[in-house]
Image 1 (spheres, rainbow, N blue to C red):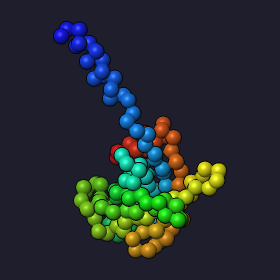
Image 2: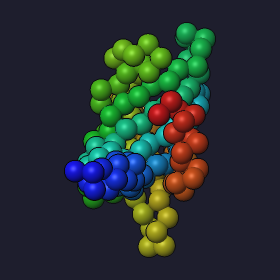
Image 3: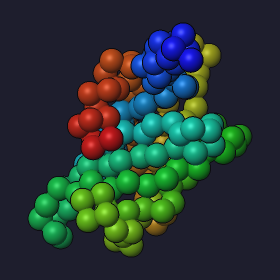
Image 4: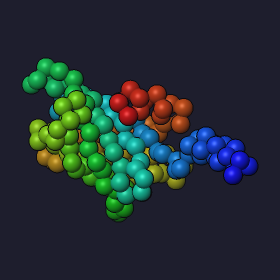
Length: 147
């Protein structure tokens, strides 16, 4: 029994350091009307579930809000569609109805560059600036957005 203690201890210390899966993180900026949004999108545990957190200044409430929504990924003829649902206010930890769920189309050119176009649940379309983040950058940004 004594001989098994050290390998078990070593395994319990080493195992949590193994990354279970690579996580893709994108930083995005978009404008809906006159309101500028800054967001992070991260891949989920499966390829069809993602999460997004959005920071923006709410002129009606006169404060910066942090909104989270789940995104469902689907392949379409326009590229990958990420459709938002289950929208909640992170700071209040409540579902919210005053933020329209977002929808993005991601597509890639032959050189591997990623492009996007956004539309929300109310049909408001916007251009999107999208930047994939390297793992070192992603860690700091995820922390900045409360993840």
